[in-house]
Length: 481
Image 1 (cartoon, rainbow, N blue to C red):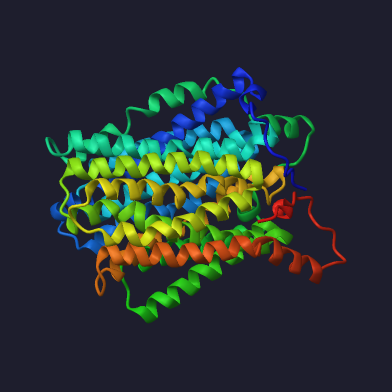
Image 2 (image 1 turned 120 degrees about the vertical axis):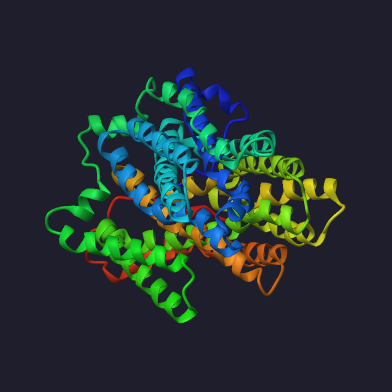
């Protein structure tokens, strides 16, 4: 059931002071998450020089955080469902702050890889905890707007990171940039300790509704004998894939990883496993179109266009503001015309700007700023409604765990994106590789959303088991594109 009516013109009047306090705390935490997470992309060339890494090898350091995200989403999502959204947010913000500081003490490739995995654990939990908290705290009629406004914090955090990079790294070291990552989270933790619990979660708790813990389902006494080995196999295979194995071995490892996650999904989601897998594929593709740009753009600007740190910072400033504006805009469009319609409209608009951005070359600085604002605003900005789109498919008692699990397994597309982009850059140029991935995979995501693939595969599965009761889950897919 979907409310397709438009939001009130004065939607802010429907919010109480406590709603804004909750939003501000979550927004700050998500913004600082963006600050800490993108630091590695800004100093990738510096790290490559210090640790003597190739571009492909250095790109795996961006991917490292995505390798651990799926487990972070699973574990911290379970905390959110079992004991509340608020403590889950505090735990997640602490994890990514500590991980960022540790990155500044890395003594080599593998230590930095491990510390980036700690950042990934916190970021995964931050995403599932914060988005679920806000979506369940704000009025239902404007939850796309809430989702878009919340996700605008991430790019603004990345803008702050890019300006900090320009101020700090040329005069000190890339390590100092990571150490600074601890400072802003103090305010977010202070605010979050004084927040009320999410309204929907409180109502479910008072009603005595049983909440689904992903960890409990996957690691109870009856299933841990096989689920623990499956998780270990998936984790090891992910790390080995990033080492750069020959193509036959890589394809075999990808098949093993896929089988592991499908098996875990069947156990976790039960009858809903088809829609969870379909959403994982959708999210995977969403990361695969956006993260070549987010992770490799600074390297492209420095190596292909020969920008200095100040010019890189300025370009990322425009890209980040475009991302933030796009997140807010798609949230409004989602409430006005439907989540899927808003999402698809933004993605289609982004296709117009891909070629011009990477065809400009040197000497067109202002034009590049404008085009980056438009491209990142419409492509990455479209993800402002992605948490709402995904979470709408799940019942409340398993929403945080399911959102965290499906979104963060799908986010492995972000692990593949920088490595795939760097590999494509070997026969092509880096700019061409980023553009090809962005355009091609965006078109795939548009098809997945327009054809309503997640809902369709679930309906097909339900039709095959029509004699069994269907779980009570909301159906957002009646929205028309």
